[in-house]
Image (cartoon, rainbow, N blue to C red; front, top):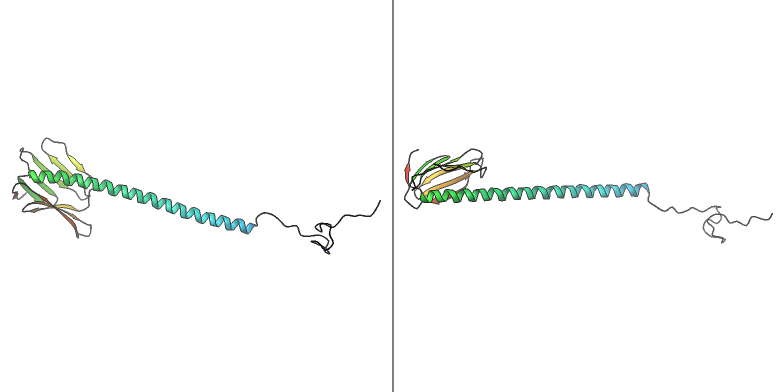
Length: 175
């Protein structure tokens, strides 16, 4: 038969080409090495951790903002109703967490604040109104022009004082 005219693999048929003189050429491999895949997985994992923490923080912040808004709406509603009663009140009896107000219609309104920050308004012949957890440490003080609502923090420092004026000169009686 004749002579074998096949060239060694990788020479491309030209003398001195790739792999010339060695017999076979290295075949370049296409694809990723195991190290490249591990680095890509680590980068992806770090991205997932950061994205999860960012999402969790965003949800927590949104919930806290909603709770603060709800508490502020409750507080405003409480002050509006209490201001109305104090403005019309003729008799004010104040103890630390309780206020009794005599109203012109012959109705007595009693405001009570508990330790958890819930304030309740009870009036003769009317449904009780409740403002749950409006603020910790709510208490009342009498002043010449009406009533002062004091909100203290748990450490006992005064945080805020809200004066409520009475239209008529209030008479302070002992409870």
